[in-house]
Image (tube, rainbow, N blue to C red; front, side, top):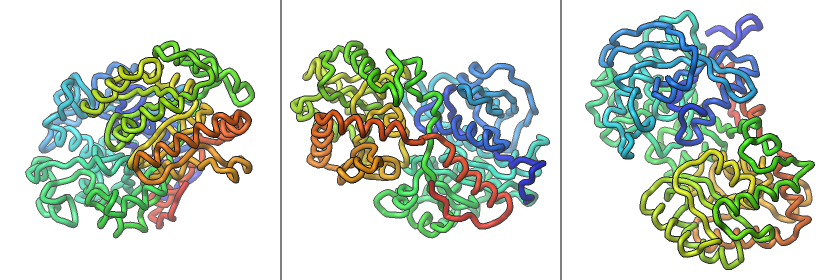
Length: 503
C-alpha cells in the first residue's frame, strides 16, 4: 500500500456502533467522536461509519445520499448517506451513515430494546455494519474515497477483518481495538452461514469460540494489528484472569498488540467554561470549585456542609465496577464522616440495594438511577474525591475527567487506572506527580483503607490543594495518544511492522 505523502493525507475508516453526542452507552461513544476529531487535527482524513439509528438520523442534518448498496447477499437492502458531525468547537467529522431502516430504525438503544433485552437480530445488524465496512475498505467499494486503514472498534465491527480476509482484490490494512474484552459478540454457530462467511472459517483458527462464533475473536484473529486502550490492560488480557477465554490468542499475538491510553475532549470537559456548572473555576481560580459542591449538596438533598468530605461516583452499576464493594463500605464511609453521591444504572439488584442505602442515610448518601449529563458534570466538579473501585478497567474516562476538574480519584489498581493515576504518597506529592489514590486487591478492607487515606489528606488543606493543582496541571488531551495512533496507521499503510506503541 502507498506511503503517506504531503499531497495525499493518510485515509482511515473508523467503524463504531456509537458516537457522542448522538448515541452512547459508555466510553466508546466518547472516544468515537474525540479521537477522530484529534486525528483530523493531525491531518488524517478519517471518516466515521455508523448505523443509521433514529438518534443518528435525527441528529445529523444536511444528509446526502451517497449510494444505494442494494440487497447484499444475506442482508436486506441498505444505502449510504454522508453528513458531518460538529464536535464542540474543534471542528467537524465526516460521517458515513449506514441506512437500513429494517435493522436500525427502532426504539431503544443500539444493542437492546426498550425493555432491556438484546435485539434478537444483533448478529445480522452488526454483521451488516462489518460487511459494509469491509466493502468500503476494498477495491469493491462504490465510493471514490478509499481508506488505507480501517479502524474497527469492539465486537460490533469485528467481522470486518474476517470479510476482508476472504477478499481477493486490494484491501485496507486492519486495526482491531479492544475497549472491553468482556463483550465479545457471541452467537450460535449457524450465524456463520447466515452472515455469508465461509464454513471453513468456523474453527479454532478463526471464528470459533467454545462451540459458538465470536465477532470479537474474528477481529482479533484476522486483523493486522490490535490496540488496547491502555498498556496495562494490554498485558492483563493476555492472562487467564482477564483474558475471558481469549488469552491464548492474544498471548500468541503479543508482538502485534499496542496499548494506548484514551484522552478526553478538553473543550467539553473544562471547568472554566462547562455550561453544566453552578460556577466556573480554573487552576488559578480553584477556590470557585466550592460553589459547585454547595450546589451539588443542595440539589440532591445532602446536608450542606463545605467542610465535610464528599465522594462522587458516576458509573454503570455493576459487579465489574465494584458497586457491591461500595455497598459494603458505605456505612463506614458515613462515619468518617463523609458524604456519597452516586449516579448510574445497571444491574437491578444492585440498583435496589443502593437506593435502600440512600434511604437508610438521608442527608448523607444520594443515589440517582439513570443517566443525566448535566448531573454527571456537576458530580465531577462538586465532589472532593471521585470513586472508581472497578474490578477491571480497560482505560476509564471518569478518572481523567475528575483530574481535569481538580477532584482526585480513588481507584483500584488495575488496567488503565494504574496508567493514568499516580498514587499520592509523600514523594509523589512533593515532586508534583501525585494525581489521586490507588488501592490494591479488591476487598472491603483495602477500599476502606484507601478512603481513610483520602480523609487524612483532605484534612491537611495545603497538601490537598497541592494535589488538586497537580491534577489540573496534567495534559489529558488526545494529543499524545492521537500521535501514537497515527504512528500505527502509517506503519500499517506502508506494510511495515508496528513498533510496540504505548502512550
